[in-house]
Image 1 (cartoon, rainbow, N blue to C red):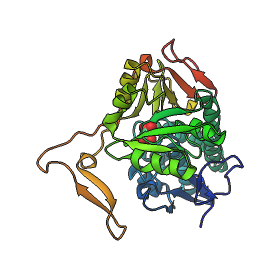
Image 2: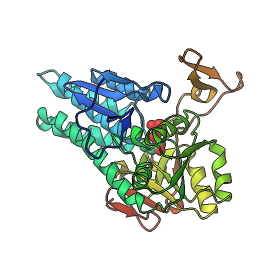
Image 3: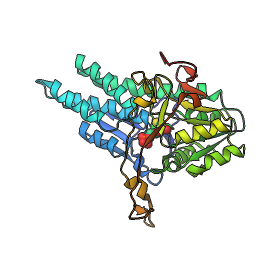
Image 4: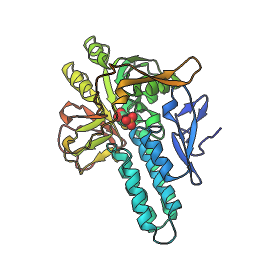
Length: 357
Ligand code: MRU
């Protein structure tokens, strides 16, 4: 029904033969692809106020560093549209605090609120423009990441990825999957091992669905199978996304990434991280400074899927009398990372500090 009019001729985000963006704004309304329904139900939803937009991020309807950043930028712009004419600053500062408290780890969220806030405080009309510029840049940066990353992919390459850092996690293209899409478009034979990514299964649900939409050959593998496939020589390259990158090149990404990096190191497999500059946080000197989100334990206890009528249901899959722990991210030290693919080129984090990504 809705087609974002800002899709570019080079967009890859295509569902049922129509191009989309994951998130966009029309007037004061934000429209977005609801990721919680996927892969079982594709639905465009909308949020009409900045508070509704905060709930969209908290509820993980939109997740993934770049998509969160774009939505946060639009939410900040909504706050400017909602602010009272007299003394708007108190309202706007409160709105910014609320948007920034939705998720703590993804750097792009804070980058976006800051940029839109600074633009709008100078001139209210600039807030919406700044939010669109950020979203456009996210799509463009992702495409460039794909072009640089494509050079790492040879014909016949088998790539493992963790979580979802494809176009659903950004405005278009994605980061870890962008090189895969470009390699596939160019006719290279590629195969993707998609880690299921417990507890929310972003790999099994979202990455797998995206790859299927694009016609990229792939298989979902259990989270604990990666090292085994590496040992068997079936994986040639690992590419993951990032939620925040510290000044020394340490990378916070979805929980489980660290294990993949350790296994890749053991078996001599190149381990790359793909992320735009908006994910770098030079105020975090090392990964120790990156805040790690703790999520509800019920995400570990329950799994979700459709019943016979297609209604999404949750079922408990763990011992009812045990507690669970659910850190959402881990930090991979720079020394385990072969390179970081950015929109400006590939950098090698273990060499020195990332003074100016
Ligand atoms: O908790 P999520 O689903 O928002 O997780 C963030 C991520 O998508 C991943 O960590 C991803 O690999 C990097 S961000 C695109």
